Image 1 (cartoon, rainbow, N blue to C red):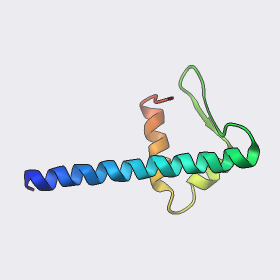
Image 2 (spheres, rainbow, N blue to C red):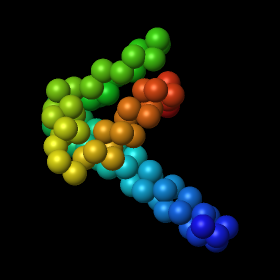
Image 3 (cartoon, one colour):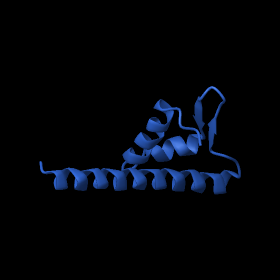
Image 4 (cartoon, rainbow, N blue to C red):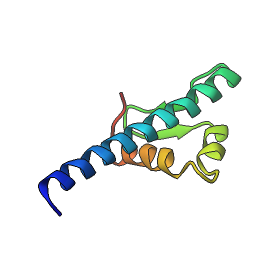
Length: 80
């Protein structure tokens, strides 16, 4: 793989990762609008709790990317 191909692949990965994050955010906003409360809670200890509706959405076919994005956040204790 050439350097140009490697850079292009890196940008494709970043773009895909951003899309996953945007889709996760859209799911969270959709559920928040419906329930009127925060659908994702992160404790001071870094534990993640999601509303059951979020969990159901993330387990639907086609939402593997947003689910992996959330798991990445959990593994890396990203809370903001």
